[in-house]
Length: 160
Image (tube, rainbow, N blue to C red; front, side, top):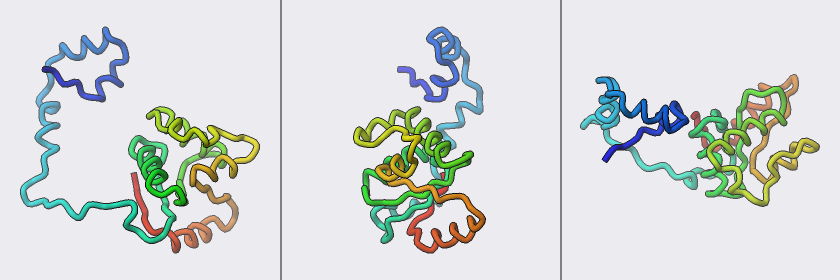
């Protein structure tokens, strides 16, 4: 039985390219991936983390447009529909930030899980963000002060 690494599917999107890649003999560094994934004996896993374990319903999430971030947004919303997620996203404005999150979640087929939510409402970003539980603070001259104020109320910070 042959196991195909997920990255090969992305790096070789056609059947022909994938076949050629599979015929390639793996290098020594590729063979080390599995052994590198095993924890050393002196490393003990900590207590399992539960999204439900923190008291406040506010989360600051960086990396929301990445692979892990998209799944964390979904997990946070499914676990607590009343949660407020503050996503730090590089964007020109709020609409662009929401679009970047949508594109990321579409890429991993996560956005359509929320049938009652608008995909993108360019006329009123707050209406699009509200059902998602995501809030982007307005950018203004007191941005840092606002972020510090938000951070006082954040119960959990996740960096992806």
